[in-house]
Length: 149
Image 1 (cartoon, rainbow, N blue to C red):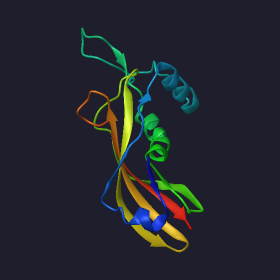
Image 2: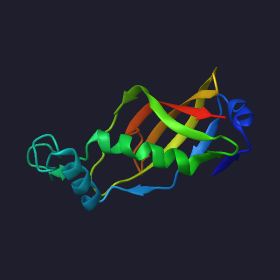
Image 3: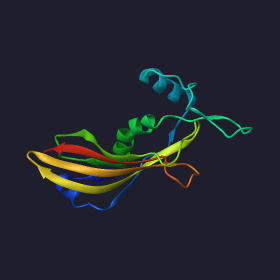
Image 4: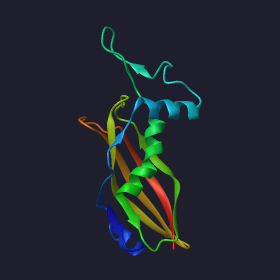
């Protein structure tokens, strides 16, 4: 974990890769709980994949990956002496590779931008979610957080 002593130190790291979160297990239970909370079933069409005659696997929804981003970011870096940091939104989000239930994922963070605003900074972090033993990422999302001083 990278610990920044304050927002000035964080902002000076623009363009740097900040590190990786721990691995998250995408268990059947986690996917089922997410599906129930979101109001759908993992048995619906679109969740099950596999070519004809091949094994069928359940693929978890990309929104579950997005829901893991805040935890992944908190595992990668912290900022001391910031009054608060809140999710301000997402810019570009892509899901290049589906993630099967049972896979493990982790997030890598790169500080891609910082803009001063009254009372703090808007900080952009590109999160790339890797799938263990897979070349393509599960998700690439440009997150925006508001850090207040």
